[in-house]
Image 1 (cartoon, rainbow over the protein chains, first blue to last red):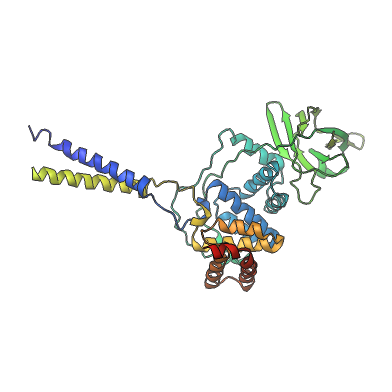
Image 2 (image 1 turned 45 degrees about the vertical axis):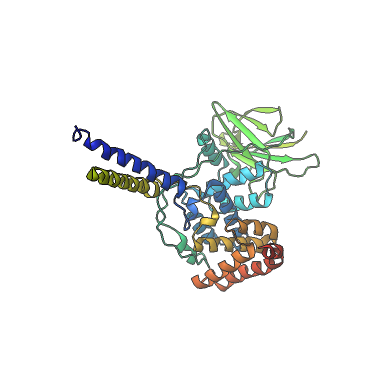
Length: 285
Length: 118
Protein backbone atom coordinates (compact mmCIF):
# COMPACT_ATOMS: atom_id res chain seq x y z
CA UNK A 1 0.00 0.00 0.00
CA UNK A 2 2.70 2.40 1.03
CA UNK A 3 4.80 1.50 -2.03
CA UNK A 4 1.90 2.27 -4.35
CA UNK A 5 1.68 5.84 -2.95
CA UNK A 6 5.47 6.26 -2.75
CA UNK A 7 6.13 8.63 -5.64
CA UNK A 8 3.43 11.07 -4.64
CA UNK A 9 5.23 12.39 -1.58
CA UNK A 10 8.23 13.13 -3.78
CA UNK A 11 6.11 15.05 -6.27
CA UNK A 12 4.41 16.90 -3.41
CA UNK A 13 7.82 17.79 -1.99
CA UNK A 14 9.06 19.12 -5.31
CA UNK A 15 5.90 21.20 -5.79
CA UNK A 16 6.15 22.64 -2.27
CA UNK A 17 9.84 23.38 -2.84
CA UNK A 18 9.12 24.90 -6.23
CA UNK A 19 6.53 27.19 -4.69
CA UNK A 20 8.94 28.26 -1.96
CA UNK A 21 11.68 28.83 -4.53
CA UNK A 22 9.46 30.93 -6.77
CA UNK A 23 8.19 33.06 -3.90
CA UNK A 24 11.75 33.65 -2.73
CA UNK A 25 13.27 34.40 -6.13
CA UNK A 26 10.45 36.49 -7.53
CA UNK A 27 9.03 38.26 -4.48
CA UNK A 28 11.25 38.07 -1.40
CA UNK A 29 14.62 38.41 -3.08
CA UNK A 30 14.20 39.16 -6.79
CA UNK A 31 17.16 39.74 -9.06
CA UNK A 32 18.60 43.22 -8.63
CA UNK A 33 20.34 44.71 -11.63
CA UNK A 34 23.15 46.92 -10.58
CA UNK A 35 25.25 46.82 -13.71
CA UNK A 36 22.63 47.44 -16.33
CA UNK A 37 23.13 48.90 -19.78
CA UNK A 38 21.04 51.78 -21.16
CA UNK A 39 18.92 49.48 -23.34
CA UNK A 40 17.46 47.99 -20.15
CA UNK A 41 16.13 51.32 -18.91
CA UNK A 42 12.40 51.79 -18.53
CA UNK A 43 10.56 53.84 -21.14
CA UNK A 44 10.66 57.11 -19.20
CA UNK A 45 14.35 56.78 -18.40
CA UNK A 46 15.08 55.97 -22.03
CA UNK A 47 13.37 59.18 -23.05
CA UNK A 48 15.39 61.08 -20.48
CA UNK A 49 18.52 59.44 -21.89
CA UNK A 50 17.58 60.52 -25.43
CA UNK A 51 17.01 64.09 -24.27
CA UNK A 52 20.41 64.08 -22.59
CA UNK A 53 22.12 62.73 -25.71
CA UNK A 54 20.45 65.45 -27.78
CA UNK A 55 21.24 68.25 -25.32
CA UNK A 56 24.86 67.10 -25.10
CA UNK A 57 25.01 67.02 -28.89
CA UNK A 58 23.85 70.63 -28.97
CA UNK A 59 26.94 71.49 -26.96
CA UNK A 60 29.60 69.29 -28.56
CA UNK A 61 28.25 68.84 -32.12
CA UNK A 62 29.92 65.43 -32.04
CA UNK A 63 27.72 63.27 -34.22
CA UNK A 64 29.82 60.14 -33.75
CA UNK A 65 29.51 60.39 -30.02
CA UNK A 66 25.77 60.95 -30.16
CA UNK A 67 25.37 57.95 -32.47
CA UNK A 68 27.44 55.77 -30.19
CA UNK A 69 25.39 56.79 -27.19
CA UNK A 70 22.12 56.12 -28.95
CA UNK A 71 23.46 52.75 -30.13
CA UNK A 72 23.47 51.70 -26.49
CA UNK A 73 19.67 51.80 -26.58
CA UNK A 74 19.84 49.09 -29.27
CA UNK A 75 17.20 50.54 -31.54
CA UNK A 76 17.01 50.03 -35.26
CA UNK A 77 15.92 53.62 -35.95
CA UNK A 78 17.09 55.86 -33.10
CA UNK A 79 16.51 58.99 -35.18
CA UNK A 80 12.86 58.05 -35.46
CA UNK A 81 12.54 57.72 -31.69
CA UNK A 82 14.16 61.14 -31.34
CA UNK A 83 11.64 62.66 -33.73
CA UNK A 84 8.70 61.05 -31.97
CA UNK A 85 9.96 62.22 -28.60
CA UNK A 86 10.40 65.75 -29.94
CA UNK A 87 6.78 65.68 -31.04
CA UNK A 88 5.66 64.35 -27.67
CA UNK A 89 7.54 67.06 -25.80
CA UNK A 90 6.10 69.80 -27.98
CA UNK A 91 2.64 68.31 -27.76
CA UNK A 92 2.70 68.11 -24.00
CA UNK A 93 3.99 71.65 -23.60
CA UNK A 94 7.48 70.57 -22.57
CA UNK A 95 10.75 72.37 -23.08
CA UNK A 96 11.07 73.77 -26.63
CA UNK A 97 14.85 73.69 -26.24
CA UNK A 98 14.80 69.97 -25.61
CA UNK A 99 12.40 69.36 -28.49
CA UNK A 100 14.59 71.43 -30.77
CA UNK A 101 17.71 69.57 -29.67
CA UNK A 102 16.01 66.23 -30.32
CA UNK A 103 14.78 67.39 -33.71
CA UNK A 104 18.20 68.70 -34.66
CA UNK A 105 19.89 65.46 -33.75
CA UNK A 106 17.24 63.47 -35.57
CA UNK A 107 17.76 65.55 -38.70
CA UNK A 108 21.53 65.28 -38.45
CA UNK A 109 21.29 61.52 -38.09
CA UNK A 110 19.21 61.31 -41.21
CA UNK A 111 15.77 61.10 -39.64
CA UNK A 112 12.90 63.52 -40.14
CA UNK A 113 13.73 64.00 -43.77
CA UNK A 114 10.26 62.76 -44.39
CA UNK A 115 7.82 63.69 -41.68
CA UNK A 116 5.22 61.43 -43.22
CA UNK A 117 7.31 58.34 -42.68
CA UNK A 118 7.86 59.12 -39.06
CA UNK A 119 4.28 59.65 -38.20
CA UNK A 120 2.90 56.84 -40.29
CA UNK A 121 5.16 54.38 -38.61
CA UNK A 122 3.97 55.56 -35.24
CA UNK A 123 0.34 55.41 -36.17
CA UNK A 124 0.60 51.94 -37.60
CA UNK A 125 1.79 50.63 -34.29
CA UNK A 126 0.16 52.97 -31.82
CA UNK A 127 -3.07 51.03 -31.18
CA UNK A 128 -1.14 48.85 -28.76
CA UNK A 129 1.64 51.02 -27.43
CA UNK A 130 4.16 48.90 -25.68
CA UNK A 131 7.84 48.87 -24.92
CA UNK A 132 9.73 45.93 -26.28
CA UNK A 133 13.10 45.45 -24.76
CA UNK A 134 15.70 42.85 -25.47
CA UNK A 135 15.53 40.46 -22.51
CA UNK A 136 19.00 39.16 -23.15
CA UNK A 137 21.47 39.62 -20.39
CA UNK A 138 23.99 42.36 -20.99
CA UNK A 139 27.39 40.87 -21.35
CA UNK A 140 29.11 43.33 -23.63
CA UNK A 141 32.09 45.09 -22.26
CA UNK A 142 32.04 48.77 -23.07
CA UNK A 143 34.75 51.16 -22.16
CA UNK A 144 33.20 54.61 -22.23
CA UNK A 145 35.85 57.11 -23.02
CA UNK A 146 34.14 59.17 -25.69
CA UNK A 147 36.56 61.90 -26.56
CA UNK A 148 36.01 62.17 -30.28
CA UNK A 149 33.90 60.77 -33.04
CA UNK A 150 36.52 58.16 -33.77
CA UNK A 151 37.02 57.09 -30.20
CA UNK A 152 33.36 57.03 -29.42
CA UNK A 153 33.00 54.26 -31.96
CA UNK A 154 33.99 51.99 -29.09
CA UNK A 155 30.58 52.55 -27.62
CA UNK A 156 28.93 50.70 -30.46
CA UNK A 157 27.73 47.26 -29.53
CA UNK A 158 27.44 44.38 -31.97
CA UNK A 159 24.30 43.00 -30.37
CA UNK A 160 21.82 45.62 -31.55
CA UNK A 161 18.96 43.59 -32.95
CA UNK A 162 15.65 44.15 -31.26
CA UNK A 163 12.30 45.69 -31.92
CA UNK A 164 12.41 49.48 -31.60
CA UNK A 165 10.17 50.94 -28.96
CA UNK A 166 6.72 51.88 -30.09
CA UNK A 167 5.25 54.99 -28.58
CA UNK A 168 1.92 56.63 -29.08
CA UNK A 169 1.80 60.24 -30.14
CA UNK A 170 0.34 62.30 -27.32
CA UNK A 171 -2.14 64.75 -28.73
CA UNK A 172 -1.30 68.33 -27.89
CA UNK A 173 -3.45 70.47 -25.70
CA UNK A 174 -3.84 73.30 -28.14
CA UNK A 175 -7.25 74.85 -28.24
CA UNK A 176 -6.35 77.61 -30.63
CA UNK A 177 -8.31 78.04 -33.78
CA UNK A 178 -6.27 78.47 -36.96
CA UNK A 179 -7.82 79.49 -40.25
CA UNK A 180 -6.45 79.47 -43.77
CA UNK A 181 -5.04 82.90 -44.57
CA UNK A 182 -3.13 82.34 -47.80
CA UNK A 183 -2.60 79.57 -50.30
CA UNK A 184 -0.32 79.26 -53.30
CA UNK A 185 1.01 76.72 -55.75
CA UNK A 186 4.77 76.19 -55.77
CA UNK A 187 6.18 75.67 -59.23
CA UNK A 188 9.50 77.47 -59.23
CA UNK A 189 11.73 74.88 -57.60
CA UNK A 190 11.81 71.14 -58.09
CA UNK A 191 12.64 70.90 -54.38
CA UNK A 192 9.02 71.72 -53.63
CA UNK A 193 7.70 68.97 -55.87
CA UNK A 194 4.94 67.03 -54.11
CA UNK A 195 5.34 68.97 -50.89
CA UNK A 196 2.53 70.40 -48.84
CA UNK A 197 4.18 73.23 -46.94
CA UNK A 198 2.39 74.75 -44.00
CA UNK A 199 3.21 77.92 -42.12
CA UNK A 200 1.35 78.70 -38.91
CA UNK A 201 1.38 82.14 -37.35
CA UNK A 202 -0.43 83.91 -34.53
CA UNK A 203 -2.44 87.13 -34.74
CA UNK A 204 0.73 89.18 -34.93
CA UNK A 205 2.34 87.05 -37.60
CA UNK A 206 4.75 85.25 -35.28
CA UNK A 207 5.39 81.56 -36.10
CA UNK A 208 3.65 79.10 -33.76
CA UNK A 209 5.40 75.81 -32.99
CA UNK A 210 3.78 72.66 -31.61
CA UNK A 211 0.50 72.95 -33.44
CA UNK A 212 -1.02 69.62 -34.37
CA UNK A 213 -1.74 69.12 -38.05
CA UNK A 214 -3.96 66.34 -39.37
CA UNK A 215 -3.82 65.19 -42.95
CA UNK A 216 -6.25 62.54 -44.14
CA UNK A 217 -6.79 60.78 -47.42
CA UNK A 218 -8.92 57.80 -48.43
CA UNK A 219 -8.62 55.48 -45.49
CA UNK A 220 -5.35 56.89 -44.23
CA UNK A 221 -4.37 59.79 -42.06
CA UNK A 222 -1.29 61.34 -40.57
CA UNK A 223 -0.61 63.66 -37.66
CA UNK A 224 2.43 65.84 -37.24
CA UNK A 225 3.43 69.12 -35.62
CA UNK A 226 4.82 72.48 -36.59
CA UNK A 227 8.26 73.54 -35.43
CA UNK A 228 10.26 70.35 -35.87
CA UNK A 229 12.75 71.71 -38.38
CA UNK A 230 15.51 73.65 -36.65
CA UNK A 231 16.57 75.28 -39.88
CA UNK A 232 13.09 76.56 -40.67
CA UNK A 233 10.86 78.94 -38.78
CA UNK A 234 9.09 77.51 -35.69
CA UNK A 235 5.71 77.57 -37.41
CA UNK A 236 6.89 75.46 -40.33
CA UNK A 237 5.71 71.95 -41.17
CA UNK A 238 5.62 69.92 -44.31
CA UNK A 239 4.07 66.80 -45.71
CA UNK A 240 4.92 64.77 -48.78
CA UNK A 241 1.92 64.20 -51.01
CA UNK A 242 1.58 61.33 -53.44
CA UNK A 243 0.51 61.75 -57.03
CA UNK A 244 -3.17 61.08 -57.64
CA UNK A 245 -4.24 61.23 -54.00
CA UNK A 246 -6.64 63.86 -52.65
CA UNK A 247 -5.95 65.12 -49.14
CA UNK A 248 -7.93 66.91 -46.44
CA UNK A 249 -6.10 69.11 -43.96
CA UNK A 250 -6.98 70.29 -40.46
CA UNK A 251 -4.79 72.56 -38.36
CA UNK A 252 -4.99 72.76 -34.57
CA UNK A 253 -8.46 72.55 -33.11
CA UNK A 254 -10.02 74.40 -36.01
CA UNK A 255 -13.31 73.10 -37.32
CA UNK A 256 -12.27 74.29 -40.75
CA UNK A 257 -11.10 71.43 -42.93
CA UNK A 258 -9.25 72.31 -46.13
CA UNK A 259 -10.42 69.75 -48.64
CA UNK A 260 -9.32 68.42 -52.01
CA UNK A 261 -5.63 69.21 -51.77
CA UNK A 262 -3.43 67.46 -54.30
CA UNK A 263 -0.18 67.88 -56.17
CA UNK A 264 -0.72 70.70 -58.65
CA UNK A 265 0.56 70.33 -62.21
CA UNK A 266 3.13 72.93 -63.15
CA UNK A 267 3.57 73.77 -66.81
CA UNK A 268 7.07 74.13 -68.12
CA UNK A 269 6.99 74.97 -71.76
CA UNK A 270 3.96 74.23 -73.84
CA UNK A 271 3.47 70.53 -73.18
CA UNK A 272 5.65 69.53 -70.26
CA UNK A 273 3.93 69.19 -66.90
CA UNK A 274 5.83 68.62 -63.68
CA UNK A 275 4.46 68.04 -60.19
CA UNK A 276 4.49 71.16 -58.04
CA UNK A 277 3.93 71.86 -54.39
CA UNK A 278 1.39 73.64 -52.24
CA UNK A 279 1.95 76.37 -49.67
CA UNK A 280 -0.69 77.16 -47.10
CA UNK A 281 -0.48 79.80 -44.41
CA UNK A 282 -2.70 79.56 -41.35
CA UNK A 283 -3.22 82.31 -38.84
CA UNK A 284 -4.84 82.30 -35.45
CA UNK A 285 -8.51 83.00 -35.90
CA UNK B 1 9.75 6.25 7.49
CA UNK B 2 13.02 8.04 7.92
CA UNK B 3 13.92 7.36 4.32
CA UNK B 4 10.60 8.76 3.16
CA UNK B 5 11.11 11.87 5.28
CA UNK B 6 14.62 12.39 3.92
CA UNK B 7 13.44 11.94 0.35
CA UNK B 8 10.55 14.33 1.01
CA UNK B 9 12.95 16.98 2.34
CA UNK B 10 15.29 16.36 -0.57
CA UNK B 11 12.45 16.79 -3.04
CA UNK B 12 11.57 20.10 -1.40
CA UNK B 13 15.19 21.21 -1.75
CA UNK B 14 15.16 20.22 -5.42
CA UNK B 15 11.91 22.15 -5.86
CA UNK B 16 13.36 25.22 -4.18
CA UNK B 17 16.38 25.00 -6.45
CA UNK B 18 14.17 24.78 -9.52
CA UNK B 19 12.10 27.74 -8.34
CA UNK B 20 15.15 29.89 -7.72
CA UNK B 21 16.64 28.86 -11.05
CA UNK B 22 13.45 29.97 -12.74
CA UNK B 23 13.14 33.24 -10.81
CA UNK B 24 16.74 34.33 -11.02
CA UNK B 25 17.95 32.88 -14.28
CA UNK B 26 15.16 31.81 -16.61
CA UNK B 27 12.56 34.49 -16.03
CA UNK B 28 13.89 37.19 -13.70
CA UNK B 29 11.56 40.04 -12.82
CA UNK B 30 11.37 43.54 -14.32
CA UNK B 31 14.45 43.35 -16.47
CA UNK B 32 13.16 46.12 -18.72
CA UNK B 33 12.20 48.47 -15.89
CA UNK B 34 15.68 49.58 -14.89
CA UNK B 35 16.27 53.04 -13.47
CA UNK B 36 19.36 55.10 -14.33
CA UNK B 37 20.60 54.49 -10.78
CA UNK B 38 21.15 50.84 -11.71
CA UNK B 39 23.38 51.56 -14.68
CA UNK B 40 26.90 50.24 -14.67
CA UNK B 41 29.46 52.72 -13.38
CA UNK B 42 30.96 53.46 -16.81
CA UNK B 43 27.51 54.14 -18.25
CA UNK B 44 26.73 56.33 -15.25
CA UNK B 45 29.92 58.25 -15.88
CA UNK B 46 28.96 58.90 -19.47
CA UNK B 47 25.54 59.92 -18.22
CA UNK B 48 27.14 62.50 -15.95
CA UNK B 49 29.27 63.69 -18.85
CA UNK B 50 26.12 64.24 -20.91
CA UNK B 51 24.62 66.24 -18.06
CA UNK B 52 27.83 68.27 -17.87
CA UNK B 53 27.81 68.90 -21.61
CA UNK B 54 24.19 69.95 -21.48
CA UNK B 55 24.87 72.19 -18.48
CA UNK B 56 27.76 73.80 -20.31
CA UNK B 57 25.29 74.76 -23.02
CA UNK B 58 22.25 75.93 -21.04
CA UNK B 59 23.68 76.71 -17.57
CA UNK B 60 20.53 75.30 -16.00
CA UNK B 61 21.85 74.00 -12.69
CA UNK B 62 18.46 72.93 -11.37
CA UNK B 63 17.89 70.75 -14.43
CA UNK B 64 21.38 69.28 -14.19
CA UNK B 65 20.78 68.56 -10.51
CA UNK B 66 17.49 66.86 -11.28
CA UNK B 67 19.09 64.62 -13.89
CA UNK B 68 21.95 63.73 -11.58
CA UNK B 69 19.60 62.85 -8.77
CA UNK B 70 18.05 60.22 -11.01
CA UNK B 71 21.25 58.20 -11.13
CA UNK B 72 21.81 57.70 -7.45
CA UNK B 73 20.73 58.32 -3.91
CA UNK B 74 23.78 60.46 -3.26
CA UNK B 75 23.73 64.20 -3.76
CA UNK B 76 24.28 65.54 -7.25
CA UNK B 77 27.67 66.89 -6.16
CA UNK B 78 28.86 63.52 -4.87
CA UNK B 79 27.55 61.73 -7.97
CA UNK B 80 29.55 64.11 -10.14
CA UNK B 81 32.66 63.74 -8.02
CA UNK B 82 32.44 59.95 -8.27
CA UNK B 83 32.02 60.24 -12.03
CA UNK B 84 35.08 62.47 -12.32
CA UNK B 85 37.20 59.84 -10.55
CA UNK B 86 35.93 57.06 -12.80
CA UNK B 87 36.38 59.22 -15.89
CA UNK B 88 40.00 59.81 -14.96
CA UNK B 89 40.51 56.09 -14.40
CA UNK B 90 38.92 55.27 -17.74
CA UNK B 91 41.07 57.79 -19.56
CA UNK B 92 38.47 60.36 -20.55
CA UNK B 93 39.89 63.38 -22.33
CA UNK B 94 40.95 66.35 -20.25
CA UNK B 95 38.26 68.42 -21.88
CA UNK B 96 35.52 66.02 -20.82
CA UNK B 97 36.84 65.72 -17.29
CA UNK B 98 37.00 69.50 -17.02
CA UNK B 99 33.38 69.78 -18.11
CA UNK B 100 32.40 67.46 -15.28
CA UNK B 101 34.59 69.29 -12.81
CA UNK B 102 33.03 72.61 -13.83
CA UNK B 103 29.62 71.15 -13.13
CA UNK B 104 30.85 69.71 -9.86
CA UNK B 105 32.16 73.09 -8.74
CA UNK B 106 28.88 74.80 -9.53
CA UNK B 107 27.01 72.07 -7.67
CA UNK B 108 28.89 72.72 -4.44
CA UNK B 109 26.65 75.64 -3.52
CA UNK B 110 23.57 74.17 -5.09
CA UNK B 111 23.82 70.94 -3.13
CA UNK B 112 25.15 72.59 0.04
CA UNK B 113 21.93 72.29 2.03
CA UNK B 114 21.34 68.80 0.83
CA UNK B 115 24.83 67.66 1.81
CA UNK B 116 24.55 69.16 5.26
CA UNK B 117 21.31 67.35 5.87
CA UNK B 118 22.81 64.02 5.01
